[in-house]
Image (cartoon, rainbow, N blue to C red):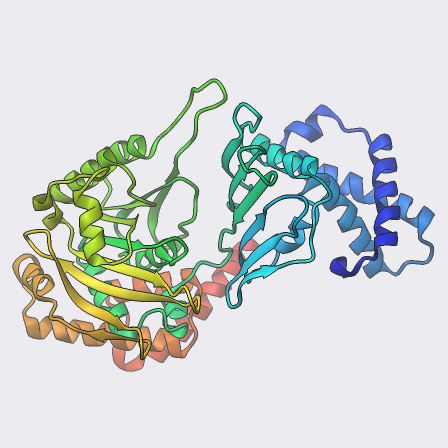
Length: 468
């Protein structure tokens, strides 16, 4: 495997790489066009194969392809870091300097030290420069901080020495290739079925929800999950710094992303710019990656007051702290405007075990206080009902005419559908979107949910046929 290539073989491969670089010639089209990337790779493969055959005789096809990929990765990618980027179990990849090995954050095991060491500080700086160049940004001694993203969507932060005093750094937060779904959250015990049904009820009836939590607690993942409950006949606009949200293909969805200024300080598109712009696009739902500043919060709460449903995240550790953050500098909203928000969901990552859990689900009262409806029993690792959803019932009674009995019946139906999704391991975001679409148009019989298997299989067959 790539991880087991011996030091001696790596020396020979480096010699091949340098010889290859001195020989290869690329045209303008290959360098500047999207099609050129594939042309370059094919050209590289053919020429590298000839050079490898000169130094290594009688290689089998598997070994030859492995060595070709190694050399291509050293030229076009991030070297050995590329191996780590392909590991679906890793959430974070961290380069602290050239002396220490690369560290990773594993979904199950937390922080782990790898056997990958970058050869020198110049290599780290080269990778940082390459990442920045791909998205039109510079990292220099004059501007030694970089926030960017890989072409795959993974978020990147980089710093240069002496700002980071032990050496140049790169931190990569991986973009989830397979978005989390409600099935995944329940199977991992992050949330229970009752909480999922309650949130679905709120989402269906256009109640605005704010998701709070600390760094790495799963705020954005949870936001993505509950967005799967949107009805298919509504216009959704998402606004993020870096694209992380992935919604079902059944939805009417317009994703938007901010843009940092170029080296001359021009061309910046801020979160506020996009929020204001989104209000002119007749959205039914607005998703915002994170609330950070006062003006963003003011515009979002004004949108809630004017009838738009808003879903966003914020850094805070519990319901009370979230209210405090919203009503104190730097956000500093008047407490009486918080009543436009319906629900507050708090995510938590246990610092001892690394487990992510829904810590609290709270209603926001008319006075801007939090009424906690569900709370995590940390000792027993169970999300328990600790209060009545009083304001939610009042809102639904007032605006939909649903009685308490009808609300309870609706919750029971949704609970059965969620249980079926979990039992049958339906964890593809588009499959869940299809189930939601069928539910909203009345084509689901709660007493015969297994009929959904046929619906999903038919959709898969049509998708395969369309690609053929």
